[in-house]
Length: 400
Ligand SMILES: *Cc1c(COP(=O)(O)O)cnc(C)c1O
Image 1 (cartoon, protein in one colour):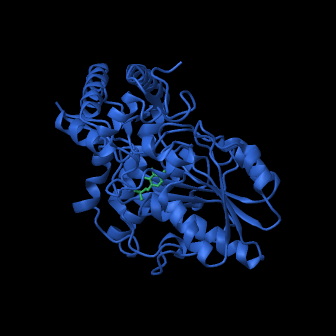
Image 2 (cartoon, helix red, strand yellow):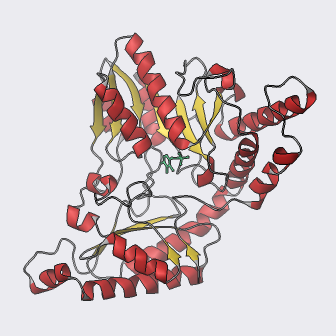
Image 3 (cartoon, protein in one colour):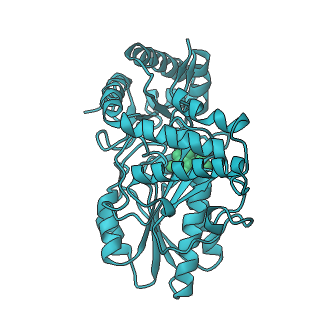
């Protein structure tokens, strides 16, 4: 039995994406900057991909910059907006406390350079409101950066409303849409998004390839200096095959988005219903305003790491916190942001299902998690204290 339930960490590549890449390794391998035919063929291919990605996002091709992934796109968007703000004496940035580390760590760096960062509190349901953004905007605010969907708990932010607030107050708005792409509708024009980040490997494309959309007129700051690639804003020979795979994967994901979302949300809700039967556990994040692929639970009296290892023994690949924080003993900043106390934040489990996940697999996961939680509690001194009443429970025995 092998069940992959960690699609929020990365996805398997689709055959369409692989097929789209193959010609660019051995046939059309010219450097897009070379003027001879083989180079120009590669150049034409990536310009075609740029147009197709732009069409999906609802922008113009010259507003698309290819990057090495979501992290680079986040870094470049935020640093560019900060530098633009600085020129006008605006050094205030608004974000949330549960962003991806690519955003949070970039903001930390800017804070050391003298920028003032406001991290909005996230409500217990894992959502920030447009009103919070509106209230936080000041005369000197140069950027609002808020993720479309959270990578750990899958909650969906009111991006269109936030975009409208930012537009009305003439503040740049960036969204990390890495988890949203392929699951949720994106139209940068309609949603008033000025900058947006994508990562191919989250929607069945290759790793090491991403997109930064930046509205025309926004002057980007280079993260990577070098040649004239990407209008001089991102040096380095283009990842031609990666770009072709990414464009194919994005088009494919968006073409099947509605049917996939319908199928996934049925499986997601089945999984939530099954896991809700485990005593002293709770779903993290809003039950409805969440990605159709995401289930995230906290279990009292459990260590997330042990849970993952025993699930791995049963053939299930899942995650506790994000891939980036696992390995450290700190509880997930996302779970702390939604108000989970440390002791339950340590006992979290993220299951992110994919288009290939079956109902049988979901039922197997429910059985396996129930067994493992029961077993781990039976050997946990912490759980014994909860049972004996030495420590108070945080959750109720069963929800509702
Ligand atoms: C995965 C992820 C990233 C980072 O993307 P990479 O391409 O792996 O650098 C950024 N933001 C979110 C929300 C993610 O899930």
